[in-house]
Image 1: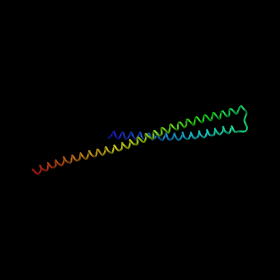
Image 2 (image 1 turned 180 degrees about the horizontal axis):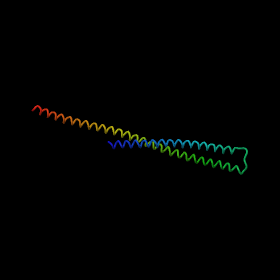
Image 3 (image 1 turned 135 degrees about the vertical axis):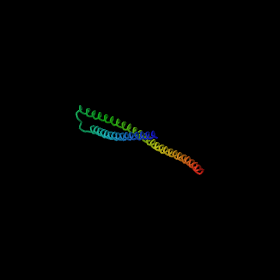
Image 4 (image 1 turned 180 degrees about the vertical axis):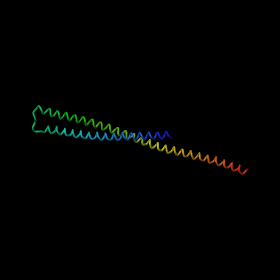
Length: 154
C-alpha cells in the first residue's frame, strides 16, 4: 500500500513536470509564431521595395542601381530563409506539444487507474476485515456457548 502511494506521488510529480514543460512549449510556440509573422511582414516590405525600385521612373546612376537591387535581393533571401527556419521551428514545437499532450493524457489515464486500483485495494482490505471480524464473532460465540454450558453444569 505504501508502494502504491509512492507510485501515485511519483505519477503526480511527473504529471506536474509534464504540465510545466507543456506550458513552456506553448509559450515558445506562440513566440515562434509571432516571430514568423514579423518576418513575413518584413519579407512583404522587402518585396514592395523591390517592386517600387523597379517601377521608379527616375533611375539612379548605373553604378548605384545594381547595388541597391542586390541589397534588396539579399535582404529578401535572408528574410525568406528566416521565415523557413521559423516555420520549421514552429512545426517542431507543434510536434513536441502534441507529444507532451499525448504523454500528459497517458499520465492522467495511469493516475486515474492508480486511483481506481487504490480504491479496489481498500475495498479488498475492508472485505478481509469483515471476514476476520465474522470469524472472531463465531469463535467468541462458541466460547460463550461453552462457558454457558460449564456454568449451568456447576
